[in-house]
Amino acid sequence: QVQLVESGGGSVQAGGSLTLSCAASGNIFSINIMGWYRQGPGKERELVAAISAHGSTHYADSVKGRFTMSRDNLRNPLFLQMNSLKPEDTAMYYCAACTGVEHMCVIQEAPWEYWGQGTQVTVSS
Image 1 (tube, rainbow, N blue to C red):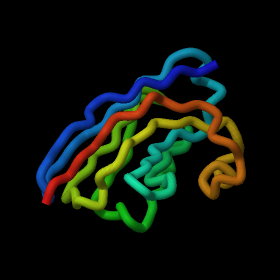
Image 2: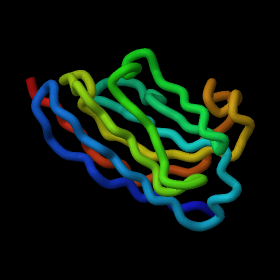
Image 3: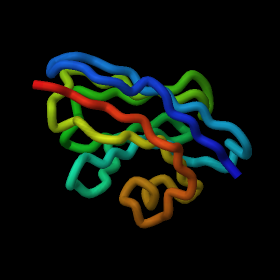
Image 4: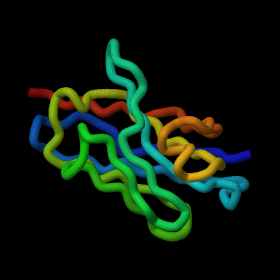
């Protein structure tokens, strides 16, 4: 089992920045991909960024060039630096982990088995 705990959400004006953190514990060596999902009001859940155990990163088109995912060591802790925030970035952000093959996790054909409780990001115009 893996436990994920997010922190760092909050409220910011458009154009501002926030950094989210995710701390993983438990059987973290089973994790192949870690990522950040978000779900805004009335929207479907979206995978916005992911990083593999080898360090390769993937970003949704909606956040490319604005969000950067990084980590301190192999898998823990995980950071999401969010710059140039827009009101449409308002959402609950969830840290998640996938133990499947990288490609299958990124295209979401493999299940993301572990989830944090979420942290709210609110961007005002």
